[in-house]
Image 1 (spheres, rainbow, N blue to C red):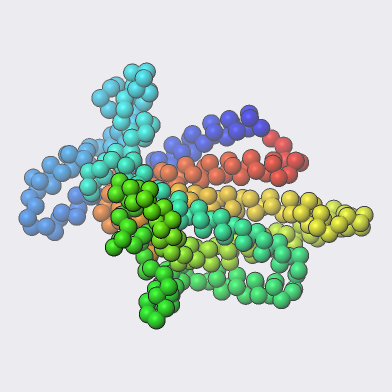
Image 2 (image 1 turned 90 degrees about the horizontal axis):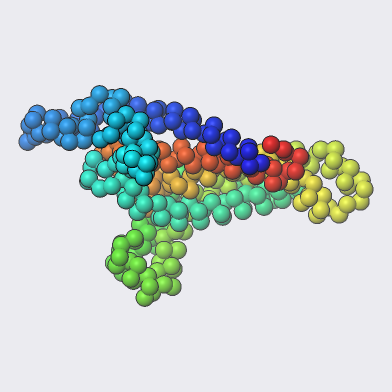
Length: 354
């Protein structure tokens, strides 16, 4: 197993390198950040040229990529890629430096660090709820095939899976956030009239003095965006779990276990479910990157200050460094999620050997 994990890590290196190349090229295909000044008559051509030079946008494309990657810098080529402790450079993603935001000049790592916690709070809450419900509902629907519950779940799956996320979010706001109900806030992460902005020093000071109130306030703001994510995700995953479980229940080893008089609960949990989980693990594992990149549509609709909303804002600002930082995190998370899924295969099914 250890050899397999090491081998997969080594195989991931060229994959991640290719991803950085594609990400960098895609960002530059959509336009130059300096183009936003083209229609501004108060900015001269000299100022635009100075802007490009300041951010290295007038360098050849290959040189820009090398600097962003961290193999080019103040030191000779490739020597710059070595760790700083070995005499290498300190710029580029190889050294943990994602650059500076073109929009506001802040460190990209600082921006993403601020946005990561809100995204983790939202997505991890939704992820735990939807995976738990999807597994339980899918397994129960397969065991009680053609029952009233199975029929109701099938209808819910078709309806829920067909609902556009943005429409569902807007409908929830319409019904639960405006008169006459007004049960939940329309957006944001906390009540800005009472609680300081999340993540600031003032917020943590307020949280220390009023932890219960702060958690309840955040919980009220979580309800609608979590409900939006959970509804659509359960509709897709529970259907997949049901299908996989039905296939497992029809296998010969399950029939043999029942013929031997094995209790039904043990047949379901020990024989059928463990084998049904193999394809489910792949599906659930590939959803892990969502925890780090955020739900773009949901965060935008509910003004949730996470990675997804940051991505939309950076697209509007043509902020290359921030966009590439988010895409790089997403790519790395996908590669690691695939590795985690493969490892879980061996945990769930002892027959899987590496």
